[in-house]
Length: 391
Image 1 (cartoon, rainbow, N blue to C red):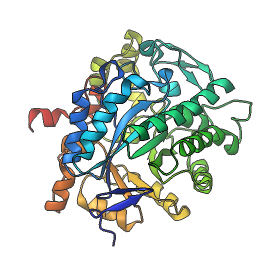
Image 2 (image 1 turned 90 degrees about the vertical axis):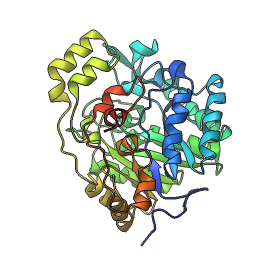
Image 3 (image 1 turned 60 degrees about the vertical axis):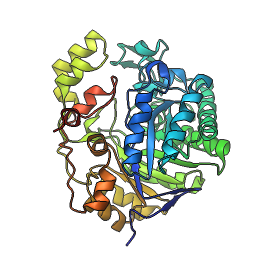
Image 4 (image 1 turned 120 degrees about the vertical axis):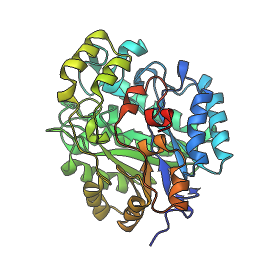
């Protein structure tokens, strides 16, 4: 039986244990720069015992942000990112940076730059149309990923996690519903996979073995005619054969089409409509139709395990299990099922020291109630309402 709290290798990096803080947007980078609030956010979970914490979401291109107050890779951001990595390393933890391009999830109204996607599509986030990415756009964005990974290694990140999920740009190209292109990037899985695979090759070429390279990959988009297991498992085989990754973090859901497929639990529609920086029309639409868009999925422990087992049975590449991991029993189950690492999000927002508690109190139950009120705070400093109240 693997000890989840013993040191473990992730590519060229040794983590002090097999727990990873999942990338969950912190909303703590005003002006797109590192703040002390962002450093403190990650210090809390690093001091709390995780093997590695993941900074989200570090956009590779200006138009690839979901909001203007989001870090994108450029010289002005590097000194702050260096301070962040230095602070985390002082705790004994490692630190990853999630890199990617939001594509159709980007907010053009906030960014002041048109959003792009696999095709032209009306974007309710900004109340305007995204434009279809050209071949020149794709070439540039592949290069942007490589440059971002290189900068991440230079400022002390131990790993980069390439975002291939949630219908961000690379994931949108993988989705049959969102990708109707008639060039070499649309149609068959091999064609739809070509852009994400180019990204991963460029990232690995840029960093070599200096740092670990992982990818966050949808198993299912969670809607009809989306990217599903019939495609995602063969795509996993392609990624394994390419040899550019040290691990895959398995996820699901779509920020465009079905966000609660990822989160599970309560859907705080009214709170999101009230607190999130949205156009008035989008805010009204969320109030009127939010209950239909934010479909309800009951929270349960290890809610992605059944799908993830199919990847585990097919691939030898290290896999990171995400979803409903909130106590030591879930971590132990993940190790017994053959997953090399586990990733946690909301439970660590509620209790940053949860990993230490798992070790010292094996029967400790997470205090996270899966109310998901934290979702409404992501652009104003992501936080747990219960933790703030001392509940």
